[in-house]
Image (cartoon, rainbow, N blue to C red; front, side, top):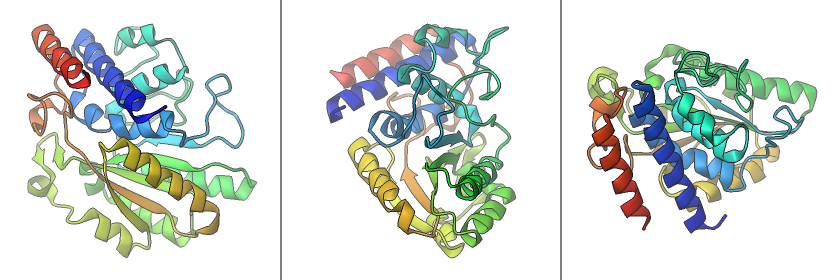
Length: 277
């Protein structure tokens, strides 16, 4: 896809995120919207190797959504990538659905690991990367963490393990929107400069605008090209805006886990359409 097509895809995913959360009456729009461009770059920018017709294809790249509450972003991305019908997005959080409030790998193709308990995703991703090295299988492991999630101690145990094990095929992407459910991360439990922290643990740290899709694709492509020759895991600090694309949601912690009302959805969809035009 060219840049215009990628941006259009991201807009469609944002519309689906908001629509499914509104229909469900619950969900997490803020952090789903902030990581949309990251997922768009990974899945539609020629970065990740995957096959919807064969979700368990050997040698594929793996994706782990550590911040599992942003499941609407992952679901919409997987649906647009062809893992399941887009119409199924309307079943989010409804009785009997495969689209639960947090991703379930036992139910949905394309979901590598069930996630949602914050702090565990990086450990799982590191374990996958270590396992791939043991089996000699190709593929990188990408994982998206929230910056508020990095207040969890288990994140730093995994960071220490990954650097010590020289897991060069592990890429941790921090969705750095600086807000969590209770407010600004620096007010709740200040994690400081996350890039400096990961660097201190021995990681290769890269910084990028999390909404610049071409820049994301260029960076991820370079990381992937160099993965076979590096012994350091990579941490990408992606600066983002919580609620990106909807003016009344942007940089508002109150939209971390609140569903829009129908009239708010209408306004949000109109804004996204106007921006796309």
